[in-house]
Amino acid sequence: MKKALALLLALAMVFALAACGGTAPKASEGGSYDITVWAPELAVELTKQQIADFNESNEYGIKFNATVEPVSEADAANNMVTDVEAGGDIFFFAQDQFARLVQAGALNKLGAEAAAAVKAANDAGAVKAATSGEEMFAYPLTADNGYYMYYDKSVIPEEDVDSVEKLIADTEKAGKYFAFEAETSAWYIASWFFATGCVSEWITDNDGKFISIKDTFNSPEGLIAAKGLKKLVDSPMHLSSSSASEFSSGAAIVVSGIWDYETAKGILGDNLGVTDLPSFEVDGKEYHLGSFNGCKLLGVKPQADAAKGAALHLLAQYLTGEKAEMERFNTLSWGPANLADQASEAVQANPGLVALAKQAPYSVPQGNIEGSWWDIAKVIGDDVKAAADEAGLQAALDNYAAKIDAVFTRTEEEMNAWSVIGGICGSNWDKDFPMSEGGGCFVSEPLELKAGEEFKVRQGASWDVNFGADGTIGGPNVVVEEDGVYEIVLELKSETEATITMNKVEG
Image (spheres, helix red, strand yellow):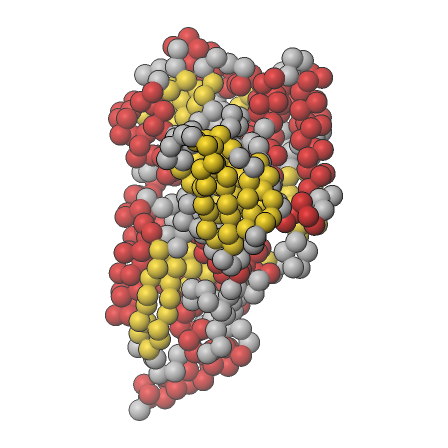
């Protein structure tokens, strides 16, 4: 009788908390719920097992009949923003999608007690990524999305790893590549600007629309960053790549992340060195290279049934708890956000995660970024390489700033326009080929394409909305099967689905 009374009192407290948005245990005498969970493909089977473990171990008698679907972190956010009601009840997503999801009403916030427990148990950066204002709207899942330096210890002396200049000299002497994606990726190029204290922060309104940007890349500090960057891109041994597979193609250094550790280890074996990024020197002063940092988060969709919502929060807390995060580390090599897991012997023995922690003081959280920025910023490396003097470097920064300003002066027509972009027609994902509307579709001009080339179709010269081969937003690149002149046709099925057709007109 006492046990039954205690349960009833607990349930009464729980439902009272539900009315206040709390996420303490709330379930109507346990309960059975049909739910849909979206997880990246690699994590599907483990997530199924973890939900089964929750069903067996939770003290409230909650049972979930879960359908776990393979949905990438990026697709999950796009799909949720488009149609919250049809979305997954629980879903994995990348932190740079957080603001969009909050503004779309796709995330059910944590109650005060749950938020306090999550904050105490998790990495501060991941907690911040899940917080808007004073409220937490998601659960930290990982804290491992950043980059650092892999190097070949048989080529690079240990005493040189902190100096860009010494590393360039070492690779040139050995005839080995210094692989740093400094001409083809804004994500990596930003490293040089963060080193000198520059910022690039996009501001949105309550509807998620980008209304302004705080960007200091075009500044005296930015010019210092450009001078440092030029040292690397001017080297004949610079390779604009971030793939650890380059170690098998003559690289001695590769700047990449935890996802590449096994590849690097498999190629270099005992010669693999792993550490934070180095510093560069300009006018007698050293600047430690910065980096973006990010994480994966777990979201819970708002529910009409408060008891189901409360049960989902319990499941989310389990899936992001110490045991589950360690299981993902052991199975998928995902770096945990949970502090106890981070301090564990196994995680501390992972050189990649140790290097990431060492780089953390120089890293910048990746916030919500307007999609066109990635193309605007990635050409800085090319412009810096082409510069003949300091005036040329300043011109590169002026060009960047002008393109940033133009983002906020685009017409409605320009923002809605469709185009083809890829490694096609002599371009390298740096030119949009316009499409015109006709017959309910959007059609490109005739394009001469080669077998093996790849492309996508996007809107507003931005990566916020882009379609690939499978007709979904953010899908895989379309691959050209044979040489010819083609018209690319886009037929929109919905906001998140389309059909891309290649009509051969010659060849």
